[in-house]
Image (tube, rainbow, N blue to C red):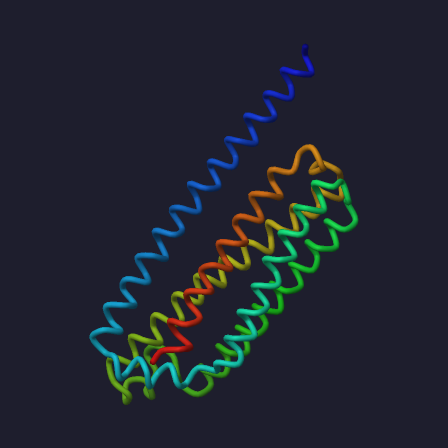
Length: 205
């Protein structure tokens, strides 16, 4: 009888955590949705400047980062399946692969930002001032929105590392893996946001 009560309590906690995660995801979608609307308005007002400014971005790097995040979504989804099957080692390995891919994304973004900054393509630079208001708006939104996304990646890295520790200590296991599921949901959100950011900034036509 006590065991049944305990299982019911765990089940309710898991459901509450999932609801909390979905509410968090909803607020994040509202945040980025608002930014996408702002971007759309400015793009409508400065179509030529946005198209020319987008030509300064490296589509190959953006494509590579898109592929990296898509693969990382796959690995974290596979880690949940592995955990459901009770395969602790495979779960940790797949989470480790997700961490590696996330770091690869950040490294690519670091060098991409560094290249643009070294060429004077950043808000407040003399070069952008010469280009005009539309280019300044484009790169202002580019740095803010991709920077905010990168912050979400960094938060995801910390959370995934924490989950790996919990899995290693068997605090997350085949009958209690809501934390891993919620982490997967968060990571899929990060992936989804980038899928919208990539064409908005790199494929402007």
